[in-house]
Image 1: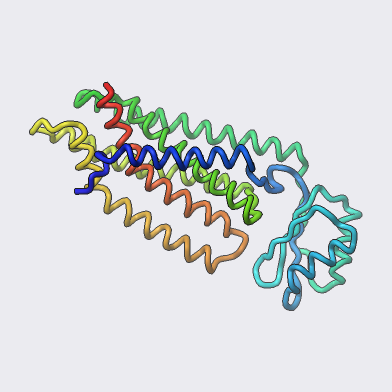
Image 2: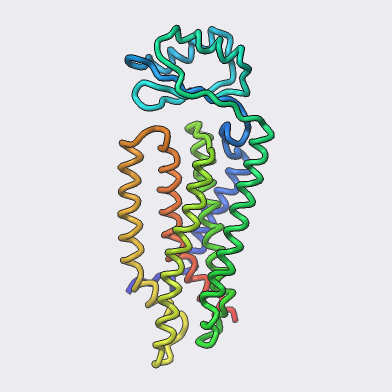
Length: 294
């Protein structure tokens, strides 16, 4: 049996360091927000034959008088151009740069007001989800108080701590990606964030449910710490095998899938890994720490 609960101080220190590094990186560098949040224009252009070198495309656009834009390869023949909000005159001028070598697949502009509204909506969605998770977990474990010092609300709060741990680390990872590799976050990152919350809660509840089952069977009068240790070890193989198969599939999609979903998949890989870690090495040890504190 692995000594996961007994070594909880190590996991607390490790998680605290990861959270501190993520928060520090966020305060120093901040997230590299995409057009969805800041507003701007997106052009998708696909060449009829092979796509020229991206640096050559960049030079042609710069020579035409355009500044402050980013290019991203898209598929085998296309690319995405993101810039500040572009007028129709500049839009047509930009198309002339490519001299009819292909066709425009998409052009859309997002105003700054829409970007600000999207940021507010994202924050509201995460807040609402976390509140409902707290209420649901507390309700689901409402009868567990009869079997120990840990009440139902503690189960809910331990779940929330694990969730915020996952959100902060996932966000911190994309702060690093944005700073060193110019990765921007968009609405797909928000979808990955919410997916991570759901995955982490599911894994945490499985462990908590096993703790509840073992509390009911506790005829030998074992301590809460021993019951939690046994419960975590009983669910360990299931948690790791489920997460490993999911991450394995996502890695394959990340390596061989389309570039349009690459960073969404990357966010899921980081989110599932941190969610699995927190449900095993953080949520249950928090319950034991609280029980001993009481």
